[in-house]
Image (tube, rainbow, N blue to C red; front, side, top):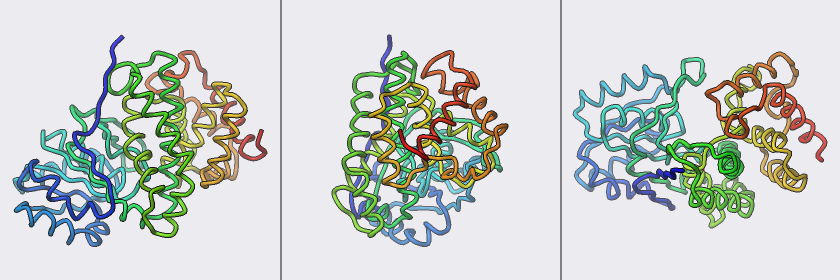
Length: 363
């Protein structure tokens, strides 16, 4: 049995950390290509430039066009080379960050990640997910190393939309349950090893922090204030969840999320929202204790995560679409196999129906 662990070289979190970006990346390069949305550049560009200029660094802004496609990656690679940049900064949400990670990986350059939302666990991982123009996953780029630096400014996170923060809670909620499943089944992880005690411990800590601080952290975001509950929850949803899924593994929760791409009514939902429903589905598949399911269900309802088909935007239940989602969650390349190798699409379909029933009526 082989254990393997991956992590970013450096992780920095706290209020006002964007203003210390230049100090933190000063050993990583001279001239950086920054990939982010026009909106984020308008909001934070001056602070980034001032911070880098103070350290005699330069930054070239490259607007991100909304989808992490191969074409977007190749376009940014060409710009990076034309501008003679020797480092890449990704600033924004998951898709902008994944684009930056893919550019840095392909060019062999240092990678700096600055999330402006805590909506998912992409920032710390050595994985960049690419999509087609329709938003369907086409490839996951496994990087040779994780980002060289991740800078999380919790003042920025606190002022982002609350729904995005809630989605991050949903993505992080899966961390413990999927790592536990992979440890039990002996599955290999994206770190190319089995689940270590360290990965299992980090995944459990992620869950415990969510349960203890998640609801209060969400209230802080709604007030646009930074509190210790927020700091603890951001550490869970960005750092521990990122390390947890990569080193602890994925199982049915994320596979259900991917499968739900087959149901057009869910296309307006965020990744973490669909993952959260996947957690309920996985617990049903595992025949988890009623008390555990009740605890998870209660947390999800308190923070506003989807617990029913209707919450996912599925107002007209179409059996054919749900069965297609279940089939997609069970293809050989999907992580449902990490739960149990012989799980069938019928079992996943029935578990999704049961999860919806639980969400509507409870245990």
